[in-house]
Image (tube, rainbow, N blue to C red; front, side, top):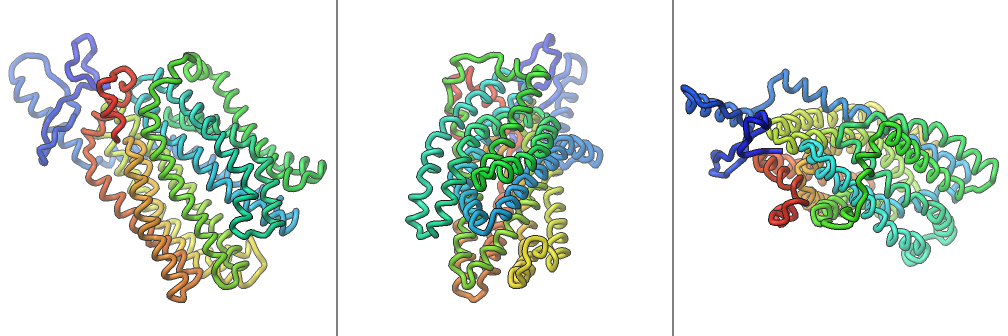
Length: 523
């Protein structure tokens, strides 16, 4: 944590000073105060100039490589975890497919409804704790870390109640939209047996963020792998042996998430981390929720806006000519984008952790260096995704379907998917930077403007009024991503990193300094 007037006993660690930049804005920069002696003023000015240059300059090749190494330690295991969890979804869909067309359609409908009304909400709310935990870890505030974890678990458990009511009423809502009664009935069965998932994820999401913000990521990878190894036999037992059908697929998914939670809890206990996370349980976790809610709600809105856009795309596909082929192709392309998203998403988690840790430790220049390196990697990932899309465009759909019309639709749109990823990868990294700097409200505004005020009109116009049809919908996504990455780069370019370090100092001490709460909450 930054100390404006450090004493000699404090060993002069991480001091800071307010100076004015070229825009006459006061910023905090780190500097090393010198002991009294000859040339004191000259030395002090040189140190201040050096700190200012570091804060506003680019990282050296050595610094960039070191930052890449630090980020890789966080993001690498997250990529493996993402691929493991992606395989869980694919396994569930395969078992649904073997149960028949009705089971596959009903399960897919239930999963889409669950994403919109439940999973996106829980995931988004959990993101709110990320900047607090990351900056608290950097500022060496373990008590604030544990309090934030406990408060977020309580928040997600509270949110699970209205979500469960929405799930119980799914049949009523879907009937109003004119969905097929048999598919709706199957979807209702699937989602009823998915209800235990809400309780598991309400604890699992915060635990993931809690560990990730401390750069502890490998245990989650191991826990996910061990749970996935049991996922296939659990599905086989519930579906083929016990004959539970769709209910068995839903219960198997719940069991897998429960296994991940159990193994992760076991890791916390054996490593002793449970003492830091839950050793200080008190009524304090029921008070002073302002800073958490001020970050959790915009994070939730930002996440939901992006998730919901893809679900709306599926609905729009059903309005095109030959909806069965377009919806099937959309399903394949959605799985493709989910696979490609694992890589920038993992890097986004890494940069969020690095930025929040460095700001919490009052090292704004390192936070900026992390951002520059991550965004550069984001653009590289975008080009790799484009290359992948162009390479597999004529073969990819054959892995999922034997219908030639679906092959043609998918092969035409895959290059557009690649163009979308050119914007999606760096903008996903930008979202991670905004989370690390505790500015989720900015991310929500960018997503709202890009996806709904730019992307949606373009998608509807090209898809339904210009004759481009299915491809036009995906061009709307390309327009949204282009707008999103442009806005995100402007926001990051204009970031005052000294001010971000000062805000981190306030946020991590917010629960002790009531006079500064307003500053904390108005992000």
